[in-house]
View (cartoon, rainbow, N blue to C red):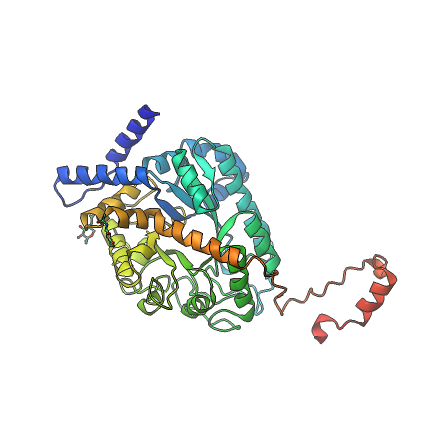
Length: 431
Ligand SMILES: *[C@@H]1O[C@H](CO)[C@@H](O)[C@H](O)[C@H]1NC(C)=O
Ligand SMILES: *[C@@H]1O[C@H](CO)[C@@H](O)[C@H](O)[C@H]1NC(C)=O
């Protein structure tokens, strides 16, 4: 494999950015970045590759072989290899109703295809990992990431972005956890029965169900702690962030966000919320993983570059500590990455930038992946501590379909005594 490694290193060198430093310095820093990345995994917590696969062909699974050679967009296996990527969370996502001109209604009961779509996307991710075993290796816990990395594979994890496609149900959440989902973003760009969102950037109407977590959403956070699924606060309203931080027994995460003090966008995290995260007494020991989306990074979408991403990381670290930050591209989930981080072959440029700012090896291993793996281990410790708790029995109180009335024609499929009970029971709209 030495020949392959040399080839990859040569390819990687050809992707270096134009920095203002003298070329020899840049080459030395680039070589140092590659060395660090070969010693400890760089893990990207937000890669939207599945939506590209689903969008390219009516038969999405027929696209999977192309991953080994070339795919349009920001991510394919050669790009990830050139970029020395150690691990990635591939995203399960289906659009909010307004993306497709629909509406959930005041109680979020409309458009239930999202659940089917999210299952299909999860299937794409699983088949993708299965069909490229020489490059991708499924991982669920930090120890799996380490063993994939040491085997020379890209650790491949599953994240889920949003709660609008969960059918207003905790049952689906429990099953998604069993199927390998490791984080759940409490909203995408729309409000849900669980939580209020910060929207897509423009003005947004308030949710009918409050500015933060609903009672049902509080049950969700407790359930995620119990299941060992990370609570992701990217996209959520500021009040949802505060509510979840207050409630969560486990560290919280932002799987792709920036600093609002640098770029005033609702997708970025404000300083007062960052100050709730870190090592201090009473703080949540969570992590903020910095995104590459030009609009969130600024100062303008046209000038956003790798240095500015480092500015966001350093600003966030100045409040939460360098051991509570990480990296999250949003590749394939945005129209373009910032200058210097255009696709998955470019990750070393960010490490070069942080090296040039004096980050030491321990801090760099941390921002690349060790901080995240520590958080994942802490989330798993909380799961272990809660293992005696029973699953939440909560349901979304606005659902008209429960209790079920499934007795068939003339209730012939119900035992007589159950039929009597069902007939006497109050109907949903009488509750
Ligand atoms: C990024 O942009 C800033 C401001 O325009 C500039 O000073 C910096 O050198 C750029 N970074 C790189 C790596 O080109
Ligand atoms: C790196 O910096 C951290 C502080 O962020 C410090 O605790 C650690 O000792 C430093 N490590 C090295 C190898 O200099």
